[in-house]
Image (tube, rainbow over all chains, first blue to last red; front, side, top):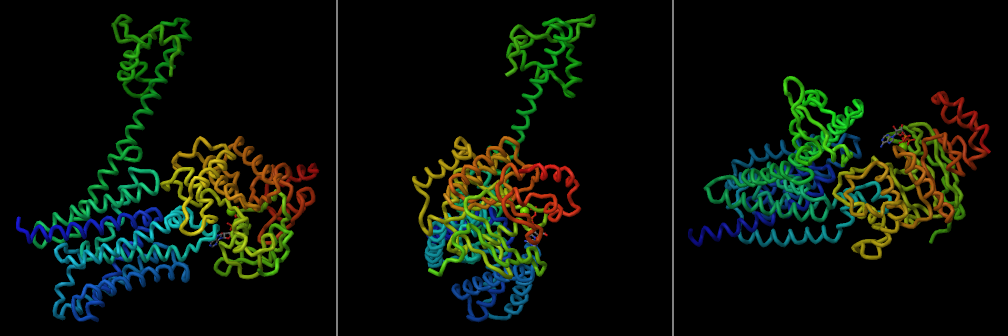
Length: 363
Length: 257
Ligand SMILES: Nc1ncnc2c1ncn2[C@@H]1O[C@H](COP(=O)(O)OP(=O)(O)OP(=O)(O)O)[C@@H](O)[C@H]1O
Ligand SMILES: [Mg+2]
């Protein structure tokens, strides 16, 4: 591996780490506030801004393009608020309308711009291209990311409260609308920073996926935000490096694939909230229920027959549980609460309570 | 500071009208709640009880009228006011512990940039002890029962050590034991000189729990000490034909002191 390549790789990895981490932090608030779609709107809305910035500056100037994206994203966020509060539209309708409007405008502008020299560079912003990120960009990214994180840390408790209980926050005297707007602006900044890496179409996944995955593992806001940052940074870096190893592989999709795998693993494996943990919990609950039921039925039959060692036929216990009783019976046998005895003319499996079982140890 | 307007009244409302999208929900409300009472606001579904509380707290903007709490507009009185919203108004799957939520009650007083520290945690634990949840401080809020959620919210208000509390249906969906505990707790606040205003749904218990009563159905139907206000005529005026139970309540109201 030449020095040249490893140098590019370092730049790419650093940029992706910054963007992924930042997106994870801000995405946590979006997800908890039920505003995942707002991220989608802002990132799609960035497209017309990107192209407008390109057209106005007449070149692929990074600053002009990012400024354009930021303005367009902010405009889109404002339009959503306006449609909701002013025109009384439902939230999802407002988001849908604004997203399609801005993205359509972006696509039209994009085709117009195709005639201009240097327009090929614009493609980067659709799906992201890690290799397009320059070393100087990374420095700018780091500064902006630090500023955004600084704001989040400073307003931590306010952002926590407006995410959990906006009305309570208002009752406590917080300027909730302004804080919400600020949060949207921060999200827009993170999206815009990530455009060159992830692209307008998939940037939202970098906001949402790490947060969704992190929520699975932890139960408090602080740990969730930190873990989302770690997941985001990790998937961003892995995706960017993987895509940079091939030539011409768009970065956004690879990053998103990695992040989605983290989500999938978290949804299945996380203790407590994961699918497996839930299944295991159901299974444990069912088992202990069956166990109690068997002991109770056997004790009941013993009492009915006035014979503490009454022999219950296994098939009858099957019928009672509605499922084969054998696994439960074997466990109870191992615990020494019941024992198997052949009984009856056909020598079929019967079970009786041991002395311990009769003592009523049903814990 | 601007001159106080009706400072001897805990909650003074004059000519208040609130509408949602041009449909008036509250009409020309004049209401005075004296300090040191435990007041119930009753009225049928959609009467505007929650809206009234929200208007008082400045959460919805009235089209007309004004509100003064201890003589002050709400913005100046926030420190002295605690609010317990309807439990369903938040997502209880939010990643937070019971203690986290109670601490949120102090965020308004803490002000910008300051974080809750040891003092605040001690106050929050004391508030939890008041509602009997001290053993649940580290519990994840998604694992609480409805009654425990309600008590967590009440602790979040109590921790503010406010002078005036507004509670929106704190007894909805809790069992009899919890309800008794909540009532005892609120009465203790009242006895300590606080003013407690509760949106209440159960007409059977109004006379037992409260000493002040406001009947609302878009307009104020009646207000005053429970013994004077809890009458069959007022009940009929507030609930109209909506109340199948009116007969039994008549009997109860007649018996009420
Ligand atoms: N955000 C809103 N937008 C539009 N209309 C609303 C809104 N909130 C409440 N309303 C309407 O205002 C009226 C009063 O509502 P409110 O919630 O204050 O009643 P309530 O007395 O608290 O009822 P409940 O006993 O069901 O809690 C209702 O007709 C309701 O449909
Ligand atoms: Mg209500």
